[in-house]
Length: 426
Image 1: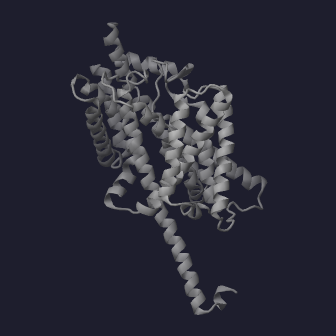
Image 2: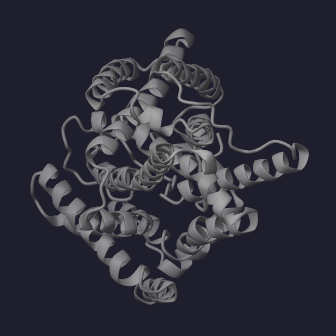
Image 3: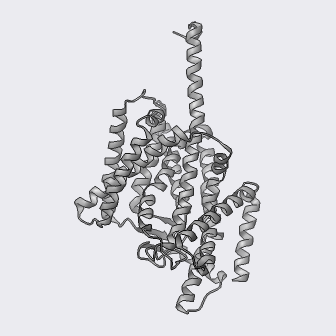
């Protein structure tokens, strides 16, 4: 029956259904933003712990003599799913952004948000961290220190050299947080290319095909299939290259090849969930407590497997599978928990949402500087970690809130002044 022929009760029901869907779509942004904000805070905490790993990460910029007990469990656990969660959310929001802006504006916005900060920070901001590391290594070995200007020229020259190294063994490798921006920008560009190619070669097909509400069994089967396929591809990647190896073009552009299947899989998963209209059924495909139990079990088994240093093909394959399913279970716990309990936009959550991305861009240099300053203080490493983490989060938030969000030009000017100060005083 056409809407104009419907009875008033049917009209009212239809109107309420549409309004409910619109309100749900709007509210979803709150819990996704909140997940992203919390994930970025944990990225800062993850980086803050690396100074206290007892030399387990020799590439880190400042090596504090204090060691936090059982730190590797924290590092292994959070290294598994923090970045995949960010890729998943980006994939989930890719289609709405593309549909809203169109291909040209979509790519322009992604370039301005991802590639432009990558270029500016890579040349003006990120060299500060490896320079601090070089100075500390020179002091330890008694060798001559170079000035920042000379170091910066060498830093640029390294951009023409391809290098592959393991963060577990290398003392020379420099890894910054900006690799994520580069990979995500390429993912968005590939998505836009796919959408335009689909429009050109399959003009009669619509992009969104809502398939109705799937059952829980269908969702579980889809998650299991995603995990199995991704696990096989990840296992094949691990057989070709070590998971700890980073490929860098000098110190400028970086990626971790073995983990690309994971990042691509969760990004594509986010795209498909939006395309099929599965987000709402996915949010109700299990209670957060149930997903927490599954995640805990996956974590327990995965840590046992990693502790055995799997090299045999069968054991390595099982480890790869458990890593993928750990990612999926934590992802399901995160979206169900935040949607049920933290799907709100209070002042605190709005501030975190508005500033978390800039905090991600900013945090590493203040963090390394604080770690350097606290080297001379004798205190429990866990207390030192807590103080440095809090100071880094507060300073990064302040810079974002009162500088970056106020003026992009003033931010670039501040980076230039910081760069010149480093050149003249060091």
